[in-house]
Image 1 (cartoon, rainbow, N blue to C red):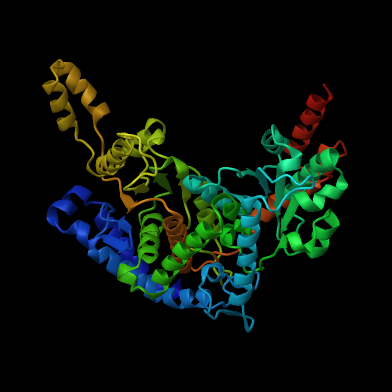
Image 2 (cartoon, rainbow, N blue to C red):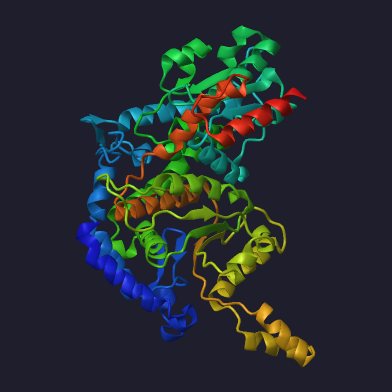
Length: 545
């Protein structure tokens, strides 16, 4: 960040000035603030006007983007360069949704034709299962599909499948298993019929420990009911390790591969999206990809000042690195997007939860904070107390559709009113004087009103972004997910880190493998710490009862 130190200092000075401003006065000073700070793409509206910033703020942030070569980093990623430098890989999730005829080369080879060949197989297989022409050993059509994976191979597909429930096939139900806790697989299989159940095993290497343990248990469940010869008819592999897949009993014809430049958190657009295609159909899956591609094109071609992911990423840097906000919240006012935050937690925190720059030096500003949230209106009765009156400022993204899929009188109107009211309440707050005046108007005793006023006051000046769209279609969902992917990339580029590796998850895995023999009853390693030894002793006593 040496080349950009001056502009970081300018931003810090500007940040100190902005903490003395209020959102209410910014709106009062500029009646056109909404028009200036709203961005549009197709039916998508992103309103950033309720954020604590001015045109000067955005000028400084775009200057930072130029100084850190955001445009160059973007071009390198989109063109297939090995931007994942610690693993010497490209990060080409955008190629997975590129249109036919586009040329994108990795190591000199155009990868788009092979991507489309795999996606065509995905769509064909999904339609065969949905129509009943693809059957299990007994010849019965599949009714239940159980997708087994972990991390990105489950979080994204599960979120998208739930979000697109209005488009589901009536005869095919898709389930997801990820936790090595046996309760996850047990509770999913309870009530399913082996003869009518299809398993998808998602593991690039077919060695992922948690996934393969769940897969082995699922295989045993099928073999005990239908015989070992049924495995090839009831399992599909989403993997590139053909030798291990075939050893498991899955033929190559039921194996769907992808590439080492597809990171787990960006994999729903690849063969890992098969459960999505099974749930909503090949045509809807294509629409999902098309929506993501539309956002890719917007991100690539739109000037920085009107670019939605760039603007959101710069605002994220402003809040985290300059104003020091430690967390942010994603609040979709859509029950079917209840798992969106879980997926975005991985996209954001696994990508940018780093303290090392690309050159190996230490980052000298705060990087990714904690991302959290759930669906409104439920959360208004849980953690919104903290958002409104807590001591920490938490920027919020509100997502809401103008139109619902359901026609239940009054429901969506009330949902919309609540969403708009929350962003307004966070911005404006309420003074003690106003709170006291309202209580007096309701006839409360003056002494009691004065005593209660501090408790009923809201500081306000809490920033939020409202993301509005007509309806949550596959196309719109693709746009929204890609929007957040690119936002995270922008932040990583500004911070000078590698957003595409995840070495932070490795140490825990290594230590788990070392501790497993001791959990099974063996002696702990000689260098085990006192706490771990004590816990292993206590565990042995509890398991012996």
